Image (cartoon, rainbow, N blue to C red):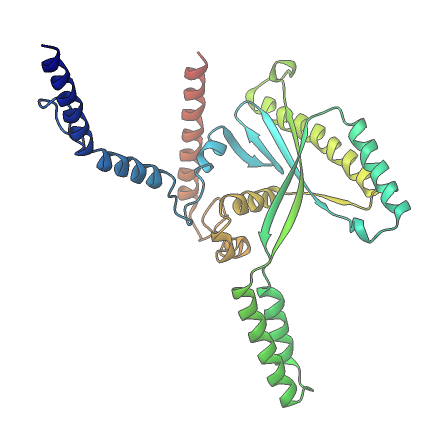
Length: 299
């Protein structure tokens, strides 16, 4: 009896080993599982998950502008009456200065940071250096010049062509530096007789406060040899255009968009008074619908 049990045990071990080597289920009524195919599919799915095209722009445009009301009066206005003002900072060539000059800049910058008790941010943006305008200016001056030798003109044409090719083959980028000031107006603290007066007071209060902060930064950083310039509404639009169109901005320049009058609110063709009034009524209707929608959401 013991011999039968031992022989049966050895037979079971040999059977299990053979099924494992053949990658078959131990129990015959179980379905076969293709392990290799499962691993390959999972690996392929994981690879496709992280395969993002290089030309795909980040989907942050709608996320950024979903609560923006308008860009006007040199400010970005949000729906909760938060205003943002941008100022461009021209840097100083710090490492070409002497030790004493560097220490003076450090002290001035640290003093300004210590005296600041409100919210602001630093924003750095890399932009493609466009040499098309200087190249066109060189070509224009060369053609209009009357005292240049033929050899000089030929040399100038070859140099302009080489600059154009060099710009296309080896693009260069520069860093733009900005100060971002933020202020939120408390509407409950403002008294007004009607809605139009309330809107005017909200904008005036926001701009006066943000402009005061801008002037403080400008006067303090001027001592550190850094010039600060206020960005207009068009300047803010240009910053946003380069932020959301980093690749397209190389060919579709923001200056060309302005020259083609694509930034105009209304069409520039001659229109009669009836047409203008209809357009204004349509705009007022859209604003009223937006306000009613906000009231419904608030309630």
